[in-house]
Amino acid sequence: MEAVVILPDHLHCVWTLASGDSDFSTRWSLIKGHFSRAIDKGERVSRSRAKRGERGLWQRRFWEHLIRDQTDFNRHVAYVHWNPVKHVRRAADWPHSSFHAFRRRGIYPEDWGGENVPSLTAGE
Image 1 (cartoon, rainbow, N blue to C red):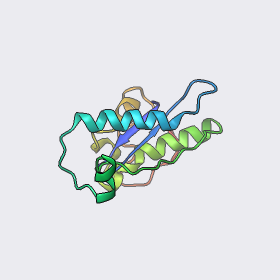
Image 2 (image 1 turned 135 degrees about the horizontal axis):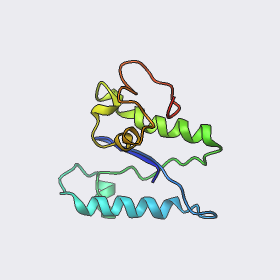
Image 3 (image 1 turned 30 degrees about the vertical axis):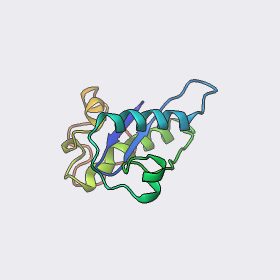
Image 4 (image 1 turned 90 degrees about the vertical axis):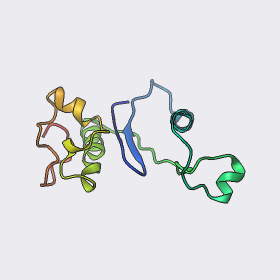
């Protein structure tokens, strides 16, 4: 996992899979299953989900995108890290994000993702 942010009602991540591997569905299933078993039940569950034995945490679908080049990768990583700014003032204020690891490695300055919309290219 290259980048990740976990928000109250969804998550975003950027993965690098092995060459020739495109099995996103299995990976999402494993992540959702592990996470769901690790937290207490109690969320609202619709009848259709209850019939299938599903939790009320996850949407059934996911969006995938094949990264084209370094610029595309940088934009997607920056999008992941910028996403929580709708909940907090700065990207650095959201604790559940790989932003902090990027900042420690010097990829982002501390104030990246503050009140002004940053360039959505990591490191700029």
